[in-house]
Structures are given as C-alpha cells and as structure tokens.
Amino acid sequence: MEISDKITVLLELISCFRKVDYWKFDTESNLLQSNNESPEVFSRTLFKNSSAGKPSSLDMAMEYAADRNEPLVCSVPLGATWAYVFEKENGNVVAIHVLGPVCFSDTNIKEVERECDKQRMSLRFRRKLINQFMAIPVLSATRFYPYVQMLHLCVTGEKIAFTDLQFEWKKEAPKRKSPLLFPDDEEENIDASRHPGVYAAEQELFKMIEEGNINYTHALNNAVNKATLSNTKYKKSSDKIMTVAITFITLSVRAAIRGGLPPSTAYSVGDAYEEAVANCKSFTEAKHILDTMFDDFVHRVHRCRQNSNISKYVQACCDYIEMHVYDKIELEELADVAGYAKYYLTRKFKSEMGVSVWDYINSRKVERAKVLLSDPSYSIQDISDMLNYCSRSYFSEVFQQHTGMWPSDYRAIELKM
Image (cartoon, rainbow, N blue to C red):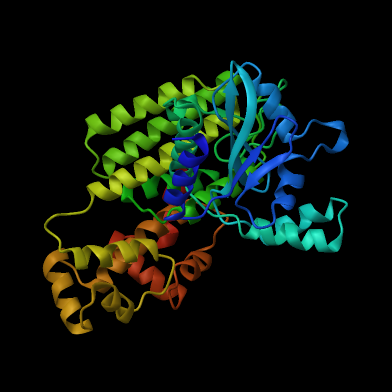
C-alpha cells in the first residue's frame, strides 16, 4: 500500500472521533495537499510565518530533520499544537507531513483577537484567521500523540513510543513563561506568601485524580492560572525542573492510590513517566509528558472506581454529580441520566449507596469546598456561590453537618498548617 493510501485510511479512522487537519509540504515549503478548507490561513500564519527575520516553523522543521527522524511537536502561545512527520529517501527529506493543529483545551476568542491585533493583516484575513482558530478541534494529549505515532508509522513504517516524540526543538532554548508547576526558570526565588491560592489549586488538582474525576478541566485551568499569575521564580536550573516534575509524579501516584488504584499499578505507571521525564531535553517536553500522565491517572482511577455492586444507572448518576459539582443539580436531571422516574431513582440510589441523593450531592460539594477553603483568595460567600448554594448560611450548615466544623473554623486550621 502506498504512503498516501495509508494516510487516507488513517485520516478516515481519526475522523470517526474528530476531524483533524492534515498537510503535506515539499522541501521548498510548497503546500502539496491538505484537507483544510482554507489552507492558506494556517499555511501562512503557523507554518510559513518568518517575521522579524526568524526562520519559519517549516524551515526550523527542515533543519531539525537534517539529522533527526522522530516526529517534531510544535505549538504557539494561543494553545494550538501540531506535529511534523518526515518522509525520507536515502536519508534526505522528500516531504513533510503535518497533523494538526489541535488544542488541548478550549480556545479563548479574546486572546486570539488580541494576538491578531498585534499582526499586520487585512480585516478579511483577520476574520478568516479567527474563524480558523475557533474551529481547531479540542483533543486530549493522550489522544493526539498516538495519532502522531500512527502517522509516523504510515510514512516511515517505523513503530515508535510516545517518549520518542520531540518537542519544540530549537538551537537555543527560548525564554518562556512557565505554566502549571513550573515558574520562570531565569529569575530569583521570592517569598511564598506572594503565591495566593497556588497550594489550594494544586490540591484541587490532585483531588481530581483521587476522585477519578474526568471533568478536571476547571481544576487544571485554575491551577495553571494560579501558577502563571503568581510571582514565584526560581534560579535557572534544569535540576529544579526535574525536581518539580518528579515531585508532581510522586504526588499523583499517591493520589491515585488514595483513589483506589492498586499500589503496584500506580507505582509502575509512575516509574514509567519518571523515566520519560528523565530523558526530557526541554521544559515543554516535560510539560507534555506530565499532561499525559495526569490524564492517564484520572482515567485509571475512574475505571477503578466503577463499583460492580452499584448498577450502571446509579453509577451514571454518581459520575454526573462529580462532573457537575459546581452546578445546581436537579433531581429531574439525574432521573433523565438514569432513565428512571424520580421516585424510583431516589429509592434505588439510597438502597445502593446507603445515603440519599441529596446527601451524596452535598458530600461531594463539601469535599470540593474543603479544597477551596485552603485558598485565602476565595471568601466563604464566594465558595458558597461557586458551589451553587442558595445562601452562605445554608452552605455553612451543610458543611458543619458533614464535617462537624464551620467553614471558617476549618479554614483557620488549614491556613495554619
């Protein structure tokens, strides 16, 4: 089977879940093929943009491929990520295949508009670019990277592991803002009191692993924002990046064990990711590995927590509650999820779970409130509103019933620790 036929089949399989753009360029950066409806937009802005005398992304990829064969993953600050796969003959590149762009979280249109305002372009092209960015498919890293491995197999016939992928290759490592868990690595460390909410945000993140909560986007974005907005800085040190990465993996392993994942499995998975991080050559590569690890642990715990003694209908309600803990949950919604009448659902839920539906909902909200109370930037009224309680007083009563403490007392103890 020809390479083009293999790629056609692969793209058809990928489109069963979500359409992902594909591009093929020759060694002169001429576009030979694409399934994108307006290929000139991303071709010009993502792949061929060589403003300020800097080489374009394609030029950089060609330079990389001169002595490397592994796929190269690239991204831009707005969150778009794509991968280059290289077709070679006798060691020389004859074509560059591109998969993407994709985003690992929803794109903020305001950020796209602000970035467009910095560039010189016509209003018509600006509108096209914004529309293209907002249409980029959102995929998890654990889904996109296997697609890249598959494309590499189609093009080269070689099977590779995730850790063989290369990230953001440059002759000189660029200075970059560091998101989740990694502060800027150029500057001095400063007092931890200037990091309001970082600890609480990270604790919420680990709580997602412990709960196997696949709706972790809110916690992840909160942790990223807290870490990025904080003033934490370290002296430049690759050892510091490695230390933080290994610490994050260790805490994730412990959270997964608390969530019910067998220790032997949790430690084996953690060891594999530690080895992958140890072989990293850049912060960006380490960040991608940690994103993948987090998603991996969450889904492993989620599967583990599927209690065989609970019917799939009640389990579906529990999952719905976990995913909507910040919302006001109505019994009608849960009845629709389970496919039962409200009266029958309440009886069946209590018989299987040992508590009423409302007690279970409140217990999950209280667990989330415990984490939020560790963040001094949130008032108790804020937390009550976030968890959709009708009033602060009612929230406080519910919290006291489940913990034996008032929210203010719980916060005072937590902040002393």
